[in-house]
Length: 127
Image (cartoon, rainbow, N blue to C red; front, side, top):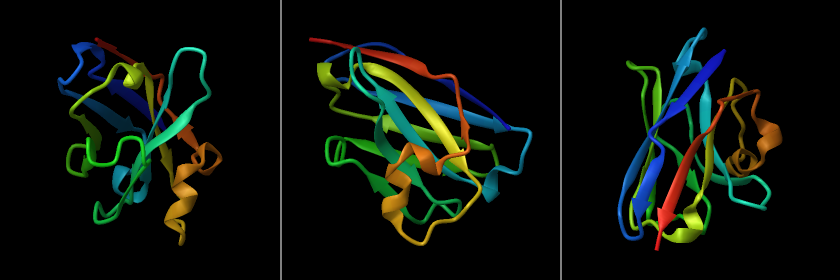
């Protein structure tokens, strides 16, 4: 499985950015997907996740109401729409995939749940 994230860049506080992550090498619709991020000097943290059907989504409290995760199974792509960006959202954003469906949505918050990771795309939010 290969995951290719893109869409990062420099954005002003209060602005928006959309990240994309394309999967190749596997059937995308059989994977639950997540986004994580790692800010400067910080540990990697959960951002959002979406089940393979697209009907269930999960968000960290920090981004809930500002970020939206979605997927297009026909395009093998998961998106992260980021609105009302803040300087503290500055980070490298990683997409991740797991082929195992978890009963508890809480499991998607942990990076150990995921089998495959993309290379990351950097988002810098200027104040």
